[in-house]
Image (cartoon, rainbow, N blue to C red; front, side, top):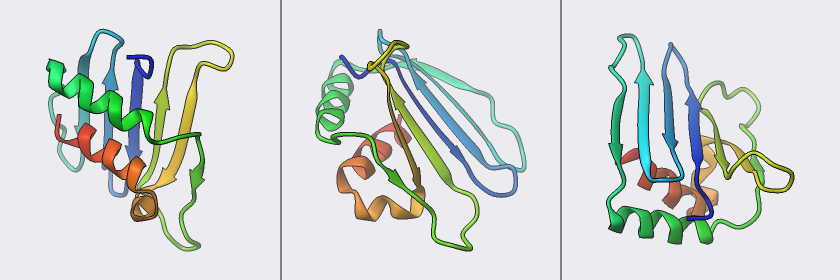
Length: 115
């Protein structure tokens, strides 16, 4: 999967955060929190999850920003794809409320959220 590793991070309000890391081999970790901490979860993508995620990532195109409207706070997200190296990292920064404007990016986020 040329899109891996990937990192998805959301910072919300009131101590909410979600961080999903997927390594090149398909192993993942999910770290989330809110008013109470949650123990990190770990696992591995199934072959069908790898194919689905790869297909979704193929469709999202070039990085772009979807900024929050004036007055909105929290729930800014970053999706980073690829290994370190010149031209090999793609970074998408967006306000989660704007996902309805970008169905491809929304599909990737929803696939990650159900891991």
